[in-house]
Amino acid sequence: MATPLAADRLLSALLAEDVKVVQVPGWRTRNRNHVGPWGPAHGVMIHHTVTRGTARTVALCRDGHTSLPGPLCHGVIAKDGTVHLVGHGRANHAGLGDPDVLRAVIAERTAPVDNEASVDGNRSFYGFECENLGDGIDPWPAAQLRAIERVSAAICRAHGWGPLSVIGHLEWQPGKPDPLGFSMGDMRKRIGGRLSLPVPGPLPIPARPVVSLSRLQRAFRLDPSKPGTPVSYGGVVVVETALVDEGLLAKRYLDGHAGTATVTAYSAWQEALGHRGREPGQPADGVPGADSLARLAKKHAFDITT
Image (tube, rainbow, N blue to C red; front, side):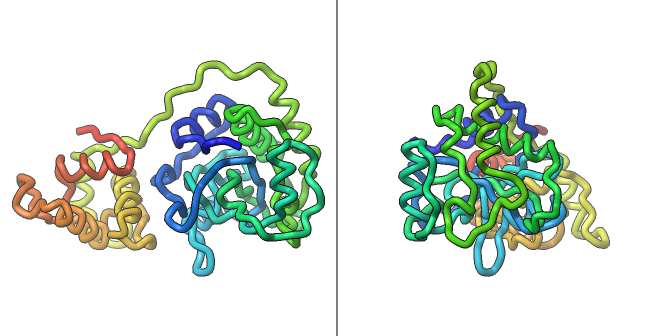
């Protein structure tokens, strides 16, 4: 039982365990906390996605679908072992599960066979979805299995847990088969072996996304007139993610292209700040200005350069 790791602490723990991490824009504030509690945390749950293709898998786990909104986990473990962080907080991954299993995880003893689905796992478990078709044929590359081991060990080490705090979805909820293709018992042995190694060195300071105000302004002024949806500056996606999280931009426009929809959404952000006529040269025209961008950055945890 523990207070869930803060976003920076989670990231640092993964990096210290030598996990290759991709921070999907907006992951620190993407969660389902408005529908239920997140914590206390008791363990780590491993899933498979029944999908093919990393980009498609990450997008699905980030956004969810019509019957189950995202995030669908905290991180996606790709075939190459890269961990894509998509959410922090409550996530729609575990669902209802067996209270006897939860008690066993808390006590760090071997869990019984799951035969009930009556307690909320979304509040209690970190969830990691692994890119795999889940048919028992799709292979589990060594790099992916190694990443599962390291991710699990990182969180267990941070909380002072042992390997019995890591379970598969199939051990939690009756009828669930995932992860299919390797043994969770064998994985726990690997995690235990890693936890027996010396504690990693000092944790690195995690980097936050950084966007250039001048390059953003150029993209917001020039991109709407360009045919198609070219990405002229990668930092646009950081701002778009913040606008999506503010409810001002539809997710389908989160593409890195500062088109008309993105400019309109940013104008709405400026209006909400009362910037019509206040921000020099930026009377809610949808082009980022220094003050409006600084306030968006402060709220959504990114940094700004000129």
